[in-house]
Image (cartoon, rainbow, N blue to C red; front, top):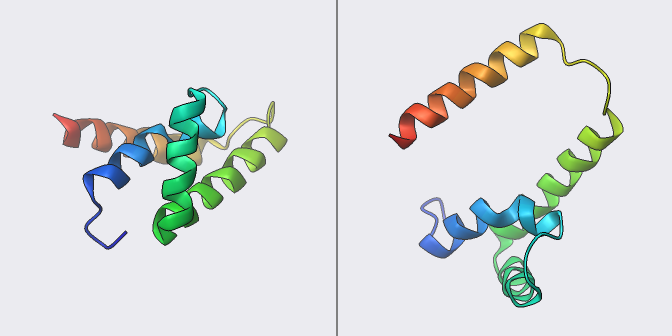
Length: 84
């Protein structure tokens, strides 16, 4: 994947957390696995997301600092505004 991701890479990124959670059909999982193996960037993205998900699971129940919540909320608002 280059700096200008293909439509296939963008579609995979949108499904990646569902893939990692095991929420996709077997055929879709296999397609994503083939892409991750062939695409260095998407493979890196999947690896990093696995790490982040594991860290979040380990921190479950601990309150997030107010400043972090505020930054995350602001970022989500910007992302949602960009989608419109």
